[in-house]
Length: 504
Image 1: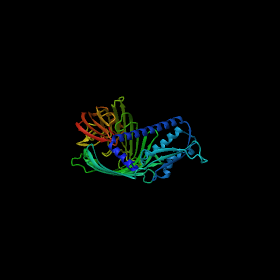
Image 2: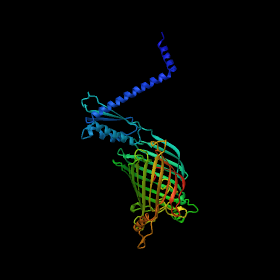
Image 3: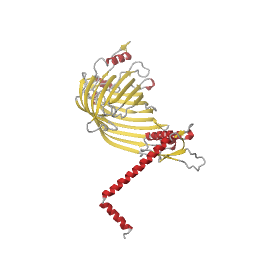
Image 4: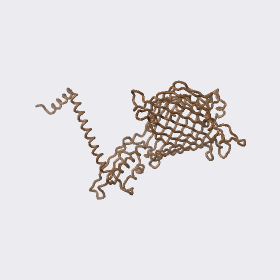
């Protein structure tokens, strides 16, 4: 008779001789386990459906594995859910909904790994204070690492750069983040920033941000280099309906320097230093299903800035506002989508401090229009006023476009690749001259300028191309043909490449 050891050896040899039979048994075991888990989930779902209106008391909530996160920070999230802090009892359905909302809030802090697990248990019924309706909730929230460092290269419209990003998370146990960024490139020659971000009152939808930065950017279309040094602070809030508001203050020292030999008189007049002190407000209502490549939904956005007015001081004074909208309409379930967008903006000169004399706008503050992410078929800043070969920008603009996106045959509509056919156009104007009593009459000048937007056809282009929507950016390769172009404007017939997060 064979010993147990020999039987084990014989069995292993048998498996080696017949691996197909071994795989079959392994597959059958996996199928049985899967069916058991499926039946368990079905029974749990039936149990919940049958008891959704049953009263439930949340007696305790424990967050596990959150060792580096402050207790007081987590208590602001979970304490309101405890039954002792509520006037009305829970039903089972309400309990699941409220706990799900707390888990979603924890996820949005960005300091925990996903998914966050939730377990429910009944407390010990032998405890005199316990009730048959009591449940204990356990939330397992594994914390992410303390830091992340990324390096890489990027290529975009007329630019390539190398960068390094570093992020320190949960610095003081309250989901605080310190981010550092540095890059060197062909157009943005250098860029450095340091940003601190923290939620207020343990609310991921209400944040305070503080940012310091320095950059040097070559603006070849306007024969100069722009150096920026400064900082900003910002309060960001997302309403329950998804509307995002950002209120901020910025103080920026700007320098127009390194002028080219052939720089125009307009650029030379703005050369040198200036300091901008401004208040800003941004409102965004984004209901698109996938912002990089929307299939349905809409976007509305406004950006407003007030600089140099009253106590703001600085060397420049103006009110600047931009508005943007986009809509995406699907054609059934074919994967074909029509997207259309409009943008517009104006810059209203103001008197500096207590002065009533409006300040003339500078090249740093005027709008630029044209390029792969705004009006395709034109060079970067190719539309609008020019002084010689320099694009000097404008004070009023309007632009619009429409794209028809198709799935690529044999690739499928589930992929982020699309073919597109587009038409887009726009106009960029400087303020018309207007005087009243020997002084510049800004309101009259602005009205004249806005009215002249519709006097002629906009500069426009059409084309087709390939779109790829990556989670962090959208890439386009297009063939464009300018259809209407004004004197001194710079079109771009042929292939062009664009990368960005916002496209017209």
